[in-house]
Length: 122
Image (cartoon, rainbow, N blue to C red):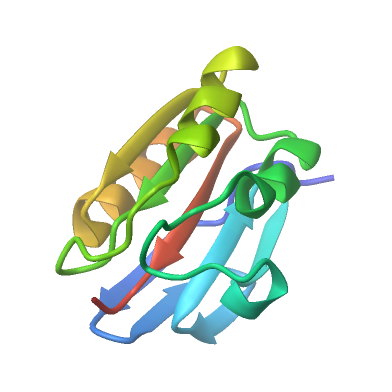
């Protein structure tokens, strides 16, 4: 079974391509796969941003390091509760502009059980 996290092979405004997962705008990625990230599932908005419920699935699927993107224009926030929860669980987290986040995630995917939330617009 392949438990490597899938690589992001393309990122541009509003469009991402993920190895073995497909093409879309926003993604949840984790060891062994990923799916579209539908903000309506948890009621996520740009502010207050990424919620603990958004990252739970990444943890459940074995992510030991998590990369959270802030969007191309750094509009997407991350709730303080989300960062506190990850810190409490001892999970290393990176919060970065989307293209930087994609680069970091792809580098980590080579050696680490990494998960990520990626927002490809603002």
